[in-house]
Length: 322
Image 1 (cartoon, helix red, strand yellow):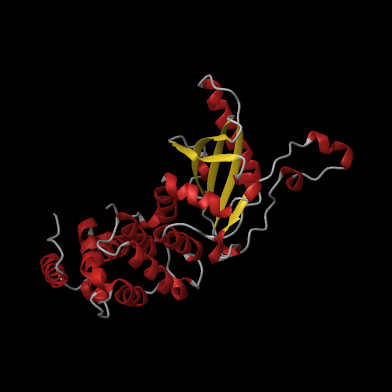
Image 2: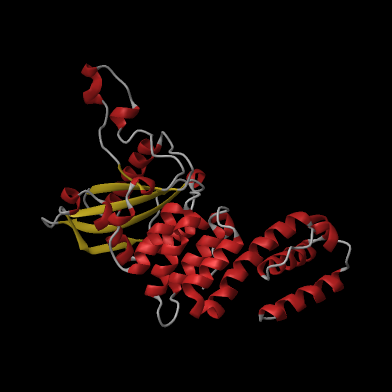
């Protein structure tokens, strides 16, 4: 399966996980207020390929739009906006209003009527959400002017404030939510045991693509999970699948090593930088103290390529493509 880009892992993970109807449905049933969920026919939740986030905000937001109906048969939409920043943006409620307008403008262009859009902001920042959740909170006016301020409220899914026991569904879904909840928290290392037990339950016979996706995200989405801790958790929780899963994790670390090596070896050229990064990533993966860039840089390209080839063989990794 594709490796998550290290620079955009939160966005990729959000879209791959919640873009699946069953995951989105389980999440909404677990987190929406009951009276809101009862108004929606989530059994016909259907994803829409459209995105309404402005280009200049794509580093901070990801979005998914789902079409559905209210229980009375009226068309409706559920709009999931993922805020992948460490602190809540005070203008989020205004940005979501713009997105809701864009959604209904697109419906009018498609010769569809205006519909109710339920905006849900998914947030997993390190601090609790403390930004406005309605325009009335954002725009302060004297009481006589309040009727002139548009009013709508966001449903904030601050994962850090939701108890783990409140998430219901298949083991793979619960493991996914736990990873998403704790990925930016120091508590992630304490939760690895539970996460891997759920993954073992979900992949008894053979690790699924979802298990691989979670492992990739653990590697690329956080600097709070030391490699030795992750490897130990993998050994304890999914030891029977170790040979299948280890190359996937190693490849992610090699990709990160490439990025670091490219920066360190940029003066020497792209291919040399990739070699430096690969060697250090492989050494670390094998439990060794990696050579410094300065130590490796004393060797010529042929020596570096030979060293990388030896490390690949020790890991049972395929030959590097030129």
